[in-house]
Length: 294
Image 1 (cartoon, rainbow, N blue to C red):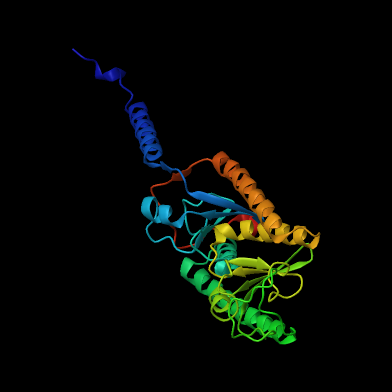
Image 2 (tube, rainbow, N blue to C red; image 1 turned 135 degrees about the horizontal axis):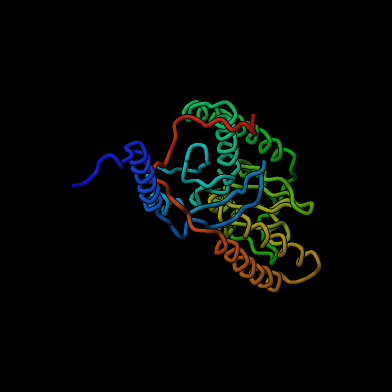
C-alpha cells in the first residue's frame, strides 16, 4: 500500500508551478515568429537611434496590418529597441517629417509615459510647424533667384514655346540641407515636367540642367525614401565629374556604376541584420517610462 506520509505537498506545488512557467516560456518562444525581408535601407543614426527604412507592405501583410508611415519601440513592441522605422512607401518629401514625428512620439512615451494618442497628436503639431516653416523658406528662396534657361547641358529646350529665360515659381517643396557645399532641395517634379522640361527624370543637378540654380541638386518629391540617398549620391558624383570637364554621358555612366556598387554594399548591411522576431503582443497604448531617459 502507498505511503502518503512521505509526500511533501509544498514541494509538489512548487514543482508544478515551475513546470507550468517552463511550459509557458516554451510556448511564448514558439509564438515569436520570425519574418525575413523587412529591412530595406539603413539611413544612419539620429538622436542615438538607428534609422531603418523598412518594407511597409511586408509588415502589413506578415506582422501588423495597421502599420503606417513609421514606427518606434514604444508604440510597436515588435519594433526592435534602438531602431526607428520609416515605411519605404514614404516619399522623400515626407521622410524628414515622418522621422521627426517618430522620434518625438517615442520620446514622449518613454520619458513621460504619455499615451500613444497624446504623443501622436503632439507629433502631428510638430509636423505642421515644419511644413509651414519649409514653405516660407521655399518661397523666399524662389524670390531670390534670377531667371534661368529652360535647357539642359546639351542645349535642348523641350518646350519650344518657352522663353529663353524663365522664373521658378511653386517648384520648391522641402530643403534637405547641403552636402559638399551643394544645396539639396525636394521639388515638385510634376510641375517641372509640365512647365519646364518634360524629360526631368526624378533628380538632377545644375551642371546637367540649366534651369537648376547654381550649386543645387533637385529631387522629385515622388522619389521613395529608400531611393533618396542613392539619388543624392548619384547626382553629387555626376555633378563633380561634369564640373571637372567630364561629358554628361561619361559622368552619368560613372555615377550609375557607383550607384550599383552602393546598392550591393547596402545589401550586405541588410543581410547582416537578424530577421524580425514578432512577439504575441504587438502594440502598446501607453508608454513605458525608461528611467535612463528621464
